[in-house]
Length: 160
Image (cartoon, rainbow, N blue to C red):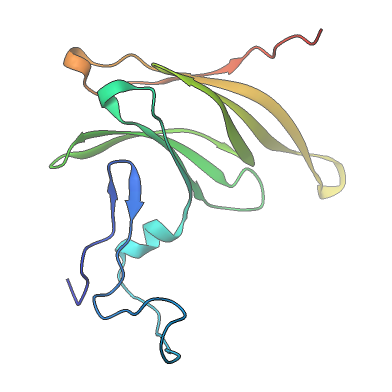
């Protein structure tokens, strides 16, 4: 693999990109000048914005992750992934495009998010709106990853 100790991959819902075998730790030793790395697999890793490992899903081990796309409007692309097997890789669902998100809660088969979305406004300014989104799923036979996920607007709790 052209001098790499390990390949870049999504491992157990964690993005792992290994450094070249000859790399030295940052900030130690003499200064080092580097050239761009032309490994095409790193293009996917470079766009990952955030990975949230979901810990209340039993053996499914899903992750909510985002990639950064067009930053003009709603350029954070959200995905929910479930590992099928080490040989088959992942089942990945694109759940939506937002400007920003935060996990509010996670329970078995459910994920509640607070999302901020941008909509076109007057005079070329985007209007930001917040809402809650519920992502839900039912595991497949024998606890396998789901065949589908459901994405819906969640009710906003009433203020007292």
